[in-house]
Length: 431
Image (tube, rainbow, N blue to C red; front, side):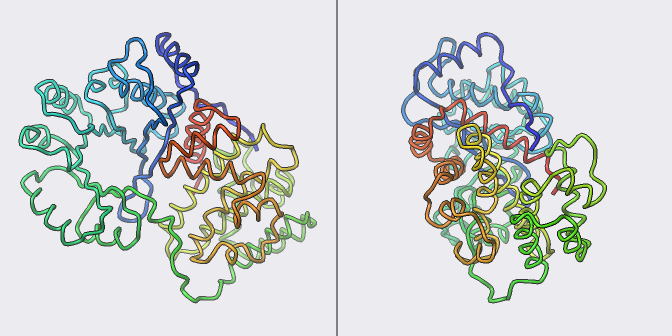
């Protein structure tokens, strides 16, 4: 695969010193993410946050410990590579009150940044900062728990209001929404949506955006037999895995024109980085070879049918970030003969959610290498730690991230750079 440059934030000298101090302190701040989805399962942005295992020292120039975390986060988002790839996607950032007036906030794109103000006492300074930002064109978000009579002037100017729906109390949620009707203006974001039942309930209540990994939960199997198109993809994967002759692979692929078009779209995506576009499957086979072809064939498992396409694409987007993240971190630290498996493990780790089957049944018939099977079925083997680290970054578990990073020999800076680069890379895929 053609690598793209690491997404290193473009800092001022003072910010570079802060980053170096952070590294030398030994107290990591890990970037975590959660997708923002609309009612059709489209991933329209991400919430990014810096989480820590233990308190960070306050760096020179930072107003608070929270300010430290905010500066690291803002520096990543104003990076030019990030903006070029994800500038059209929403980026939700939880910021401390003191960070709202910082110079880095001014460098955020007003059309896509959402500034979620952490709960705080409604001081005149907070209200002034918030109102100045809205006048400057920034979108602000408030959490329901932060609402108080003193926050009403700012709440009326906020573009978003976030409600935690993790308790799954539908009647209580209806009552909460009734009490908020006086605000009228803000769009509603449902936080901690962890089941499709909660998602469907919030959708009926006219929420606008949804945060959580509800789409990645394995659903009960429908009882349907696996369709012919997906079976064909599995046959193609096995042909590629055993390095069958290219004409044989091409003849099977050409039996499904839709698969052929999809595969060519993937291979010609900017994220792949081919110098010249691939115009035919024969050309693709010659350019990529069996191992690279295999990884792109795995993507077709998610997108070959129209039923549930929105959810499938959300799953694929997340699987791509996982796959690239594990590959970014693990490739230089593993034997050459195992490196290609990092990407495959990341993609296939969401196959059970896609098919609504236990993972053991989901991978049946794929003839996977034993190290991949170990990681997917038992959480063991050379790939298991890298996959677990990717999942911990999604689950916003800084303790697990720190423990896994230490066991794998990667620090917070390496994890964060790999995470940002994976977001950038996945956005370049033509889905």
